[in-house]
Structure formats: C-alpha cells, structure tokens
Amino acid sequence: MPIHTDTDHQAALHEIERLWGAEEGTKAGDRLDVLVTLVDAYEARRWPIALLDPV
Image (tube, rainbow, N blue to C red; front, side, top):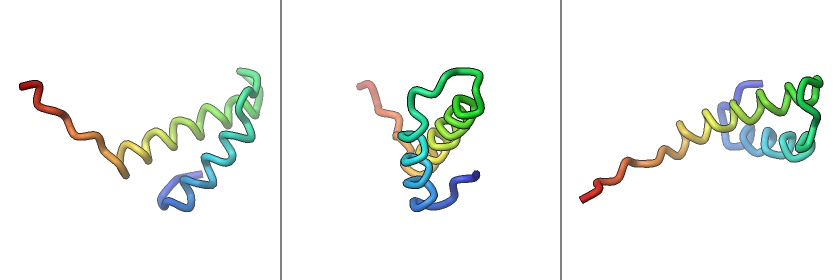
C-alpha cells in the first residue's frame, strides 16, 4: 500500500495503531513492519528536517 497523500498517511497511521503489539513473524507483525517503513519514508519526504548549522 503506497502512501502518496496525507489521507493515505492517516489511514496507514490508523492501521499501525490497530496492529500495534502484533507478534513478530506473524502476518500482522510483517504488515506492521511494512507500514511503519512506508510511513517513515513518507514523513521524511513530506516534512523533511533541515540540517542545522552547529555554529
């Protein structure tokens, strides 16, 4: 399930909440891992964090 819009993002967050705590190695756990990865990638593109100047 690709995440292209803020609506897709919200749907993915709701699904992550539903799947939270799923056991690793199960279908639900695998789906949770994939969704978290997709959400992370979308958020990095949508709301990038600018590098700060340390000085």
